[in-house]
Length: 333
Image 1 (cartoon, rainbow, N blue to C red):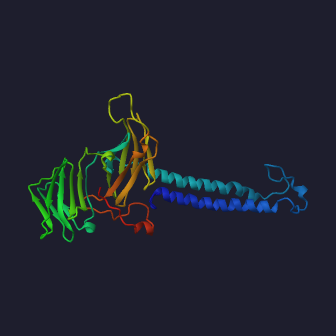
Image 2 (cartoon, rainbow, N blue to C red):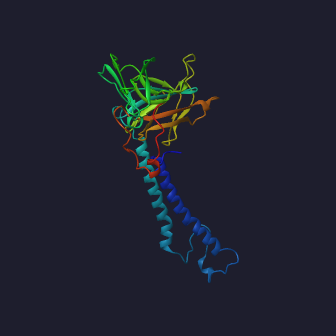
Image 3 (cartoon, one colour):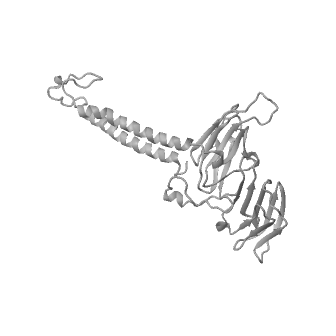
């Protein structure tokens, strides 16, 4: 089910409301007419004067106001529903410029998703929830991990695929590694664990050009509180057969009620835009049959806060109370 604050859910509720109103009047009049004019009911006096003909109003006796209402009211309703639909359509299909949105290329293959990052992203789990804070970034030559009030005991630093483990100074409840320079061009991940190797906190830097794959268990990671643009492509798994350009996929994010096709051979690709405002991990699936292992075309999308930011601002439609009180499912992967 889509989240309660998506434009699609709101439009659905509005259409359902007006459908119920129309249904009440339509079926109400139908049942009244069935009871009033059923076989065996005493006919109206002077029935012959009505000259009733199928498909036309009585010639001698009619109600002009009622007849006009039969045309005017449905027309107003149709115009109103069209306005609602077009307004929502405009909201969904307004594509922000590359400078104003976070951009990722999504490539559908048989049978996995690839995520090619066109913009850099540095994110971190909510420090107020994990009691762990990582300080490392541009111009920094010292990695600092603060773990005051947490159960953290060790830290794993992975830079460009190379992992190094460090113990946390339990007395000071922190880790300081001097001479470790931050390189914005390298994929870096810092994970913090407790004594039983339970993951407590994740900090990650994804440089431009990073490629993640659902085949390896990677998640698509998107920042909250800013528009995101996904350029979607369907491509072959390899180049061994130049004539094969892939198959039809459909990238579906049920949480936001959005879906877009990936068309093989379409070099320009297709586009999907959305603005998530709730941190958490949500499902990705393929809504188009794409071969024998179509069921493997699944994955996850992590909505995270950029380093130094939070996802507390509601940038979408006002949430219902139940949705606002839901606990986050976590941003790590």
